[in-house]
Length: 259
Image 1: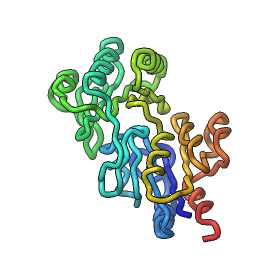
Image 2: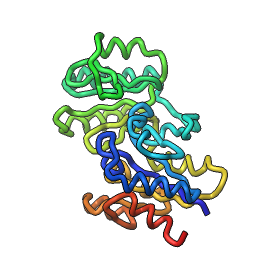
Image 3: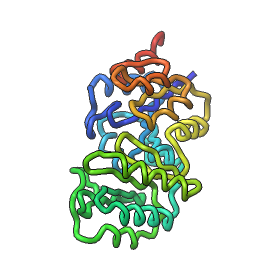
Image 4: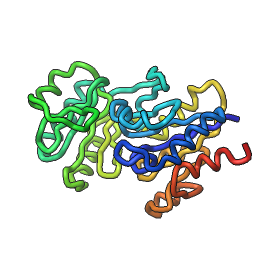
């Protein structure tokens, strides 16, 4: 039976936008050579993820914490977005209450940011300041929004947790997921629901493996047939997985054992 590995990106297989070790790159290549699948499963949007993908072979991308799935040709297999007016309301209310936080949103084409109180866009070289007002750009956005993100410049959590609480109290069908210090706001999806959705879209049964390093990976751990994390993570995360490793390539070694 075919197998598929779902891998988180940040802190799991990449640091910044670069591979943690070339051994992971080689292992992913070997996994696919053996006719199995590899998919990233991340809170990043597609523009952010494309900063990492040149370094890896892959079959699928599960993006926006499960709200979007594309194949290696960027064909959209599944997508759920936040309604334009709801995304605007969430961003404006959060900004009015906490104007010193950083915010980003992705409209399907471009990631816009309010970073360190400057209006920015995401480029291949990171966030670059542009002319214009962040809220005015938001106002002129007509399309629905894939994902909204909020985070504190000093990585504090009090305000972020308050925004998360307010969203869950006020909105039905909107999910605010804490991703280390980032609050990822999407429709009601998780990495775990994205994993299950992709498996259901494949035209065959597969055995699913996953690996991640943080609390936003817990639902993915629950949904996969085999869940892995790292020896270095907190005990509460380790307890949700069946095995701990130091690198992603060790998971792939387990997957290919005997082949």
